[in-house]
Image (cartoon, rainbow, N blue to C red; front, side, top):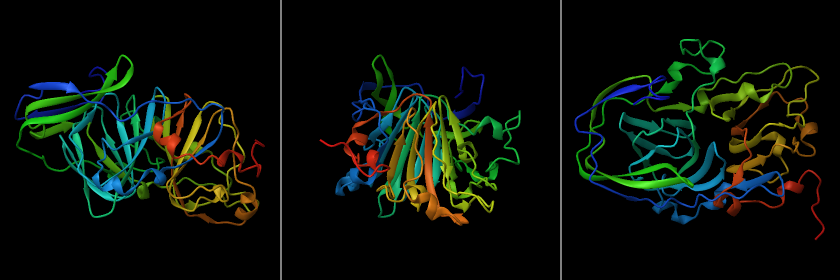
Length: 368
């Protein structure tokens, strides 16, 4: 199993059966993948917890995903699940799934991962797996699906691929699967998300024997978890720009996280971000813990997304600068995705929108 035409990372998987053997195939109708452009151009607030009802107990982490935002490089979905998912693999790109709350085991062809609150679960393209929630609470997942590979930023790595000392995490923070996970079965279904002539589509494959038949593997390509609590924040005397918060990169987008940290310690520092316009990117912030100081008064809370599009400057809500003066520590947790192509709204994003957010800096909206 190799990336980039077997000229990049790869792994050797030792199967008991023939992984190419198929006995049936049929279309898999994906959840709604339609996207609507952000027009008129507006900052948006999406309340993802509004998408979750009591039916989460019957939902699973794959077929229950609701598309929130997307473009040609990345799709962001949200789901609350209570049931095991079908066997699934994404043949389009890597997935980085953030566990907002709850816990699960992620069974993969490489072995089993244990996923808990705060984990990023990194699943390489075409890794057959399924999600099995554990516990009585909903498993809330923020799924970032790439059309490419997702990896640590190159500036954190030596030329041989080792994480450098200045990186905010290291190899011991990455947790791969343990011993082989073998399952017996015949005529086993696997849902495959793949590329089609009109975009993202799906197929239901049936295998004569269970795909979890790998007795061993070796290599540098495998799924793993990384917990956000192991990210060591980079701080300074004055406000640090967003790249210091970066955790992963992919083609045409990056993933960052804002974690609890000591804030700017110059005696005249203003700890909250300055007003800024990221002219090349759309910025998506998922608020998943703590108390985000700069957004107080906007309606944003736990489970919210803010979308600040390129071409529109943004910054603290009115009064946030004054409230932040003298602060020494911010207790906040957020996952940020910055994209280099404009993001469009999925059906989940449209359903979860707070229409008042765009006017929250001015204090009034259009007179209609």
